[in-house]
Length: 247
Image (cartoon, rainbow, N blue to C red; front, side, top):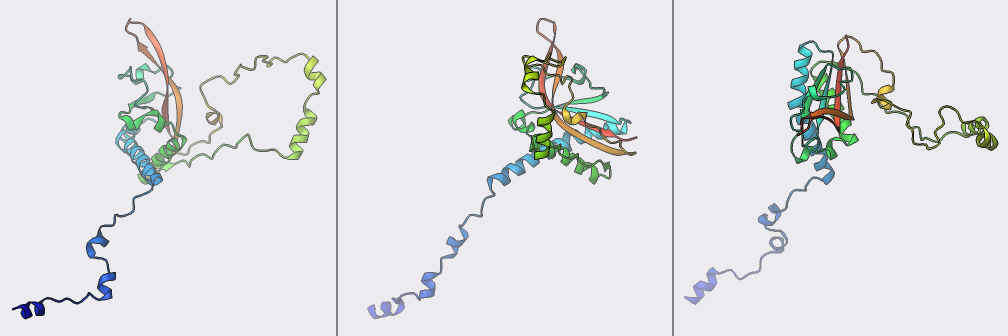
């Protein structure tokens, strides 16, 4: 009986190939590599911008274009701006900037705060994404404007020399009569008005049916009624999206 049991049981050591090869369960338990943090942030940003353009801006935009509007704007209010005034509307805007068709869009949720939507990269991607959607729909879209020239770039040696020659001497600065634009406190801002430097640049004329897209962060004021029944003005930073159609 014992001889039969010893015959049936194989006491030999396994070959070297079987020992060195990992079991299938071990090789299948390896997790796939996770995307980088930058890739996750880029995907989340693109998803939020896509939802805003596709679900909120496009339906309102096409409705206004079908009514014959050639210049319309959208005031996009982040979730943490004007939280005490949840019912702001277009009629409450103090200055319309000479645009008749203005639509107010309120964003909701912790992911739609101003810290996200006021980033320069987000503003640029919002404008480019809207241009791409309009081009895909068959519209003629004006190319994105070029970046403004940085005024802090270094000047050449000849420019510096010419500036030194044209600048008044120390005696003239000390004893001459100050001009009308002289500000002894250096606090007066002579650049008045709501337009930014980029908006003051001359813009080319649009061809027929060509569309221009402009997106920026801007302070907008609303006229509201207080608890005492008095009118008050509140101002906050919002996204200003303007679309113009050539005629």
